Amino acid sequence: METCIIKSPLGFTKIIGDIDGVNSVTILNSEEKITDIIPVELEDCVIQLNEYFDGSRKQFDLKINPQGTDFQKKVWNELLTIPYGKTTSYLELSKQLGDVKAIRAVANANGKNPLWIIIPCHRVIGSDGSLTGYAGGLHRKKWLLEHESPFKQQSLF
Image (cartoon, rainbow, N blue to C red):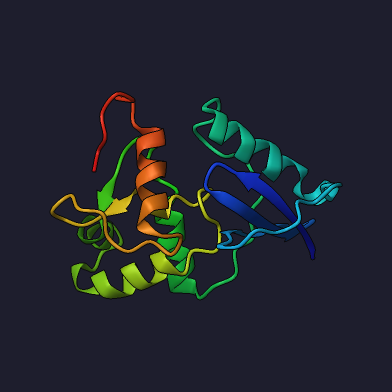
């Protein structure tokens, strides 16, 4: 497994992966030493994250390999269908997965997403339109949704 640390507008970001794909992209809550030489297996991920942050990328095209249960992977695959600049609710996500009663399990799987931004869990909000839990912190979720908003002069939340 290869690892690198990059600086993003939301803080230090740790990327882990190998030839089978990117396993994890997480935001860190502390300062870390930025990786001087990016491992070749992670170069595309670093490039695409930087493009996302500079506004030139709206969709990722990476080989990913998140580790989780079959149910979690099913939820994460559904998250990949949420378009850039759009949101859905946990309830809608549960309906799309075929079980409205699974809303808590869906929310739990969403919170365990190991591929921050690439699998866009930040695009899931409360049924009432409110910001709800986000492993990276609600301030980061707000930033990401505003970054993706076509209406840059307004604040969504």
